[in-house]
Length: 150
Ligand SMILES: [Zn+2]
Image (tube, rainbow, N blue to C red):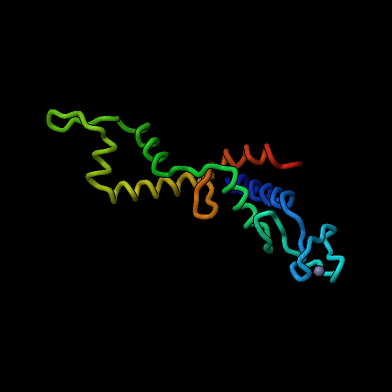
């Protein structure tokens, strides 16, 4: 199970390299060969139109934020509950929407169950977290299929 996520991270890193250029911060100019022609350093940052930083994780976060729609956790959790339980419950003479009743009568229990659902989705690698937002692994996968030059 761990392998798919690692594979995606490796591909995302590759994409981040493809979408950025080596940059010498000291001379403040690109160093496309991988070594700065002016000062000779190979301790280079990566530059995109969005900025200049060391590493690639910030580029990965930018790319995902720019191109993918985050999961609406509340909506998806609710949907998964609706698929597992009867839609309505009978209270006295009333047919009530079970989800609405559950949320209103015990919001804390609802919240805990939602957090557990999210943990489960993440441990099954259905969902990945970037920048405090959640994304479908399958969406990231198809994004990589489109963008990554192998
Ligand atoms: Zn330099």
